[in-house]
Image 1 (cartoon, rainbow, N blue to C red):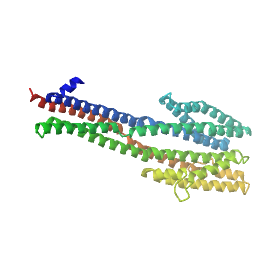
Image 2 (image 1 turned 60 degrees about the vertical axis):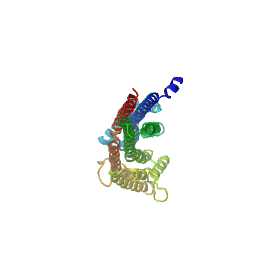
Image 3 (image 1 turned 30 degrees about the vertical axis):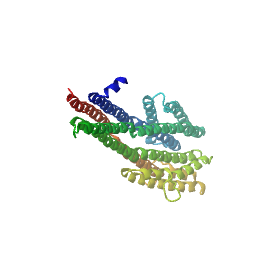
Image 4 (image 1 turned 90 degrees about the vertical axis):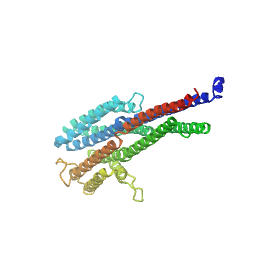
Length: 434
């Protein structure tokens, strides 16, 4: 400290100290900014290549399991007349769910809460499949026990597998939200140090002007321009990345979450309808499940606003997906009307077989006028909307990490230029004392 004090008592000493101060401040600004911006870039990369894919995989696991349960009930009702396409759809659903579970487990860290839910799913999917096969075998032989096996399998699906899949989705969605927050965070420390560097440069130039009466020092002006350029680059790159990430969430990730919930609800309503026929009216819980699910699907907030999953999916949907969701709503309403008509056949006219034939058919799924056609059309249109929203996410978020990394490198280089220019500018003043 004494040496520094003695140095500041001479003009050359003060110039050397100012040069060292400017070099330290500008280099610290560059290093801190590069680190913070690179951290944002890594978070943005995780959003695109890790968090969102895992979030969507969890949603696809949830939907595939729900669809497998629904399709298994459809095949059971058709028994020996079960079309090959129905069986293949069930097997494909389980294969897709198993593959996605294995891939997610391989990509998820051991400390993630998702690992526990993935382990549960991995253990329970084969158990569920075994129960369904027992139900099919008994059903084909005409044993009433087949219906009990299927209802038990479905209960296991709805009380163990689907809740685990929902928890997995929640865990992955939280991780995605955390990465979004990190990618969109403002580097306040970098801005603060950048302003400090600018203020220090202006102060040193003002002191030089008072002592030497020289207006311009090209080195210090160059350093000031470099730091100012770095701050502007940081601002432009950060604003652009924030805008792109915000669009990717609003146009892709958030609509996808709402749409995935709607797709599971549609499948749950169809499952409740099928299980009601499997139980042959011996239980009211499936009719109650159907009513609860369909009300949740189409509910409003009492003022015409969205509250259920289908209206919510339409409200959040980007332009490219709105037509598909609107059409899905219409198909869903047709299926719901046909369900109510079948319920009247069963409950008013005591025509169980007629109600079953109006609900589940061995005809091709696209035959107009059948409940199967309406349900499958709604499901297909929702799948098209999901694909459109995923494209929106990818188009908006792709490349944001590269832009941020470019900004990090640029700021670091500009900070080096600023430090070198400041030292060179003050060095010229020092040379005058020799």
